[in-house]
Image (cartoon, rainbow, N blue to C red):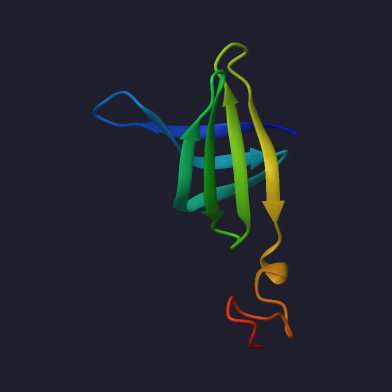
Length: 88
């Protein structure tokens, strides 16, 4: 899914997403969880102000942004889900 991204360019000139636009809906970036580079793309994993988890990528050639992953906040802590140690 193609998106529009509002970025902040820090003192090093590196663009960091501050919000994404999904059609008419704006989702602010509350927390950058992770970021990484691939040969032709930059990826950012973040928690949105809607509490969803997103992974977006920026194509360095086409300069397009895309959502590559979304996790609904309701699915993050579903009742009955077990913890890392196998307990509920």
